[in-house]
Length: 484
Image (cartoon, rainbow, N blue to C red; front, side, top):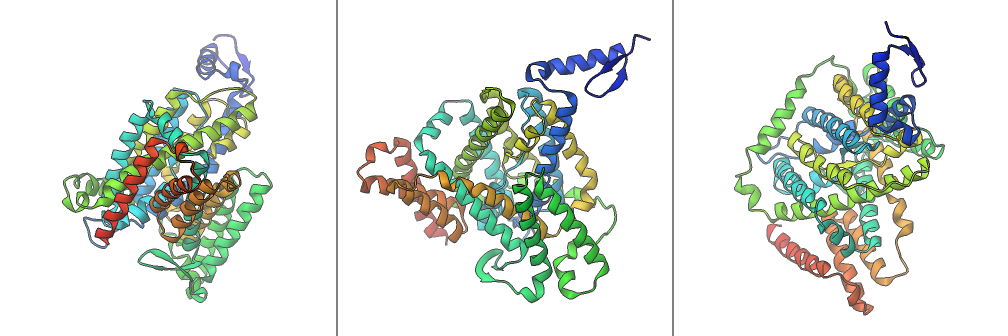
């Protein structure tokens, strides 16, 4: 046997052959240049997974509320959504790590999943039409990402309106989350501005609110994965109460938390969701509705903002923590865009890089090796599906509110002193909430900005593409009037 040496990363003895493989991996991921180790990358990768863990519960919770256009009264299968979420996150995160050497996790995007369900699927074309729109828009977005169109789109819309759209989406998904906790009544699946029946919902409301406030406190205390920590604690409590208490309100709030054994039958839901979707490309009930075309356009714009803004934010934090001076590569942008194509083919809403990757970076992740750890954790989570299936909506709702709150931070960076900006930003945010539609918020926000520029005699600042978008949005509202 070759002479045994000691490896500083794992503090264990290895043969010469094993050391050669270790050196190759270190070289591939540029460990020496990045001044990192296997130990740091493993801790960082696992930390990123913990920070992203909530999406395994939130994505199925939101998308399973999407109606089917094929089977009246049926919804998208939650088990299939869970599997698609875990698998898509596993593949996308792994590819990002191996091809771009960046510690950036990817999974279905918060905000766009809410739009997928409440604004698109439940607006007459079902989750089948929404998935078709997601696939087409992701292909277009990938094309945009490999051409100069991406740069043109960036320049056409003022930075403050980019921020306002993100803030509006934050308010929107927080509203969705508060409803899932149980604070608001719903009518046809849409929240109404009226408090719910506390007598029947108080256990879920109390638990969800405690999880939310606890997550905020842990976040301020710089805890790793504060949402995951509070969700886990609340989940354990919900399981105990659901299986030991006969109180009607408790049973109603935590009915999903009853243990029914290690049952994986719902995995078949993947094929159910995909079969229903990919047999509907010729369904005239989908293509006859203007919402399908509007949603494709809006999805491209939103995915563009979401992906570009998130990757830029991660890159800034990466450079700050590591002391490096790296720039986003074209390869990472294309992988991020292409991930949505894969996600839609598996049956989830738009994929995106996750700003929670910064948690892993803060714990030592500097290379794509951390992504291998994160992706493997997503793959292993498939075995725990029966447990994730038990998660009550009030718990995942608390996570949704927290993420929405974090997204609102950018509101202070909006140029409120500029009339044209303040008008567009205000309309964008308020219409997303009051009309329960992200698309309406974007449309009114951009149109409001144009009106503001006309009123302040700043029409020269309006990009030609923005005039075109305004016309498109006017036609959108005219078409919408005919489908009401």
